[in-house]
Length: 359
Image (tube, rainbow, N blue to C red; front, side, top):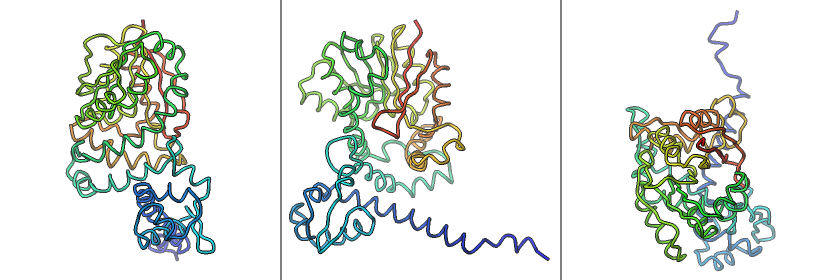
């Protein structure tokens, strides 16, 4: 006779298989921090110059050999570097994803893991008691990490790959337009566009004063006179004049009141004005995200940052995985017309939404 207790006993093989999977998850988390170290210390750039012993690599990077040797052990056993006849090498395909100034360099992303991990105790408390962690809880490092994550893709893709997805947008900016970026962060997108389209004027809005200081310094260093930055809550976005084009790049989903942000952007546009929103590539329904290799990352950063900063202000807590179905619906509810959604070229984690205020 079989009892319910018998049926509750898990298959030992299944337990072992899941335990191996779980240890792989933990190992990946550890390797992520090792990748962050390699990026911070210049070890990947040094390794990309060619095979080397641990002493030679340490000399190239100006580091201590004993630490470099132990780090190399993690890199080799983790499948990131190779080891042969006493020399370590970074394969060319791996170097392409870990070095260089282009958008394919994923090394800066590794910094998110230790950064978000610093607040685990506080996040556990809001799990129990409600509320959230404000932006200040992630300062000052969050600004710099996000700047590093976004800077390379924006440099490489914004003008040549993303703008052409919106018919007529490049021509509009070339002719001269008033442009706003809501939640601009360190303002690099506005600096790029201000350089590329001198006939247009650009204003970036953000609530983080340290990010705005960075933005103003970069604009000044570039000698730009057609871009400025202002501190403003995105939900209270009210420019002094209507704008022709508005951007929101990875900014809407973590707002306290995202519906008010979208309505404010709609109302700030001239009739026929264009709105371009870049946001996470996810579906609204969890079931539709199963099998998406990026989904665990999106839900993780949402739990540890995006959702909690919204809930800290008593907000909607949309989270990074709010998904395109909800995004399109909210854009419609804000008054926008037809919405087109396309994968962001060169950025598998993002979608580009394009719409306009009806004339």
